[in-house]
Length: 254
Ligand code: CA
Image 1 (cartoon, rainbow, N blue to C red):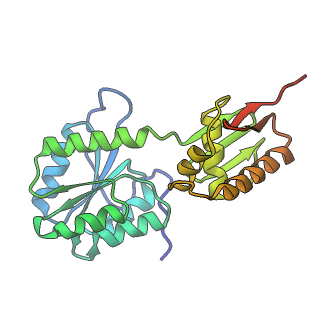
Image 2 (image 1 turned 90 degrees about the horizontal axis):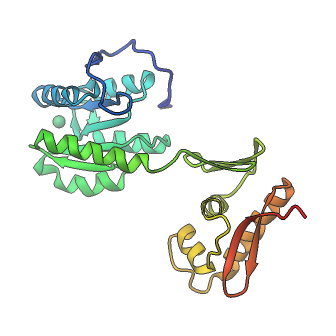
């Protein structure tokens, strides 16, 4: 099944509840999709979230949730696990497989505690066990948004534009065709211009593990990155200094 998660904002299909809710004190109104088949919980979720200023979309089945996502782009999903037409965790995996970064809060019954670990591994950002306090739900959602909002979507440096969610870099609008490691190295460099970073630090940040004796791998990736920057005639370069590491800096114009 092909799924389209990022779509135009039209509102035909399922009903959008709470459209008239108040604006959040700061910033624009966020939309939350609640997927829950227990009507009482769904209504209470909707009431609490609407009162807090969110726009709420409701779905009592996965089919309805998919229908919403085909037309709307909510900022978060509050997701039940046991649903009449399937398992919320499978739905979550579908989302992540389709590269959706939408924050997901799982709602789990006490008997589903083993699902919490599976849910977090499947890409859930947080979970709440039922029954829960609505103040806690609101606070957890706020925390979830704070975490998500800390990650910028893109970073620009001179002719370079790094699209963080897609993991691609454009130099003067041309795709540099970087590998995943080259991308994460370049992101580190761009975020730390004019600062020397050790091989150990770069490796651990990009590979997620200590360098051990793998200095050659790092060297090879940095040399590829240098070549690609050079091929595009970039005004930035990566320099190396013994004992200090590597530094991303503007080429001298003299
Ligand atoms: Ca349920």
